[in-house]
Image (tube, rainbow, N blue to C red; front, top):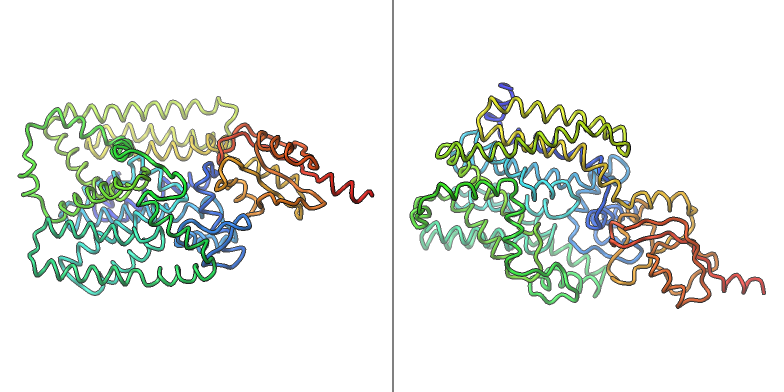
Length: 547
């Protein structure tokens, strides 16, 4: 333990990256896709490898990607050594991004805020163990990669403003380029807005401010060069369809002019999700309210260092920026978490000194959760529905949680509680999520289709209530074999994935078609509706051949 503690103090960035890898890699490999979002991103990379088109690959026979290609590029390149895209390789970019976020936080608070190595590690570990960051780090989505690029760009622009340097300028350009290639122009706009607000608050002086503005503007323009090439090449291939999609995703989402409703929520939704996403650390400011005595906001900001001011600017600008559009999701606020974590840690440490009893209440709550998790894991062998891998993972995780609880009693209050929280996440990710999500996923139906349909048989899908929705999970596990049901069914028929209601409606509208049910699932993880596999036969073509 002393060796581990010394390593964390000396090398906080490396220590938090190792902790993130331990928490995330095994769950990513064991947990199947169980939401439509993950396979939708992964199937783009799968299409890249299968078609060789790394600019605008097509999936499901006709669908072009919703997002720029950087995440798909990362997945495809990480999958090349293995020959195929798996759950692990599809989630590796998010895991690597989480590791980079942790390292950035550790570097920022140590170099720019002047904190010790131990406190830098604690701030970084707190960042990656918030519910929202932990959840996003284990998912095949663009959000963690975007957050890592934005966080790195903000810190690099901050250091560029204070110290200059060609290397920092190039780093800012590279990071904003990655951000734009991950989710569009917002990856450049948000870091520039944050550094502009910081510069105003830091009172750099008129001449220095406008010099910084020119440098940031140059970096912003250069960060658009490679994305501009990709957009031009994608437009050349996709034409009007690609242009309309790009305009809707990048501008329609911000202005509320999308052709379909997309995560429309009221303004207070962001505050609600931020409070929930910061769990379990949301309890810290709540407990601190009982100890704060009439704080002076003006004095706090007046005495705030430039690095702390950057953290405040990043939190405020990101929150306001994503409150303006009607489309709101909790993951949009992820750039707040790396910058709010040091403040939460400082408040936690202050609470431990000012009111040890109140702080111990938070630690006791976490200890109770750890004990409950350990007991639940020890009871896992008595559950017949768990696999052998899950049983072993449950027992090992229970031992790990129990060990940390015992050791934590002899450590400092903040560090011991952080260790317990990280261990709880690890145990849940390894032992609980895989069997639970295996029961939810559509992977079993994909195996049924693969075993039932011949290699050359067509496999179609029919989803009438949402023309943009697909059976993404099955499509991924079938290597992008599914196509949209055509208007004219070929003579040989094929296999159809649809809901029983859609099947009945289709039969009523097409009297020459017969559907024979083969397998059913109570609820698809993609459509959240019942789903079935049918053998589809065109009886009109059969009668025609008899004549």
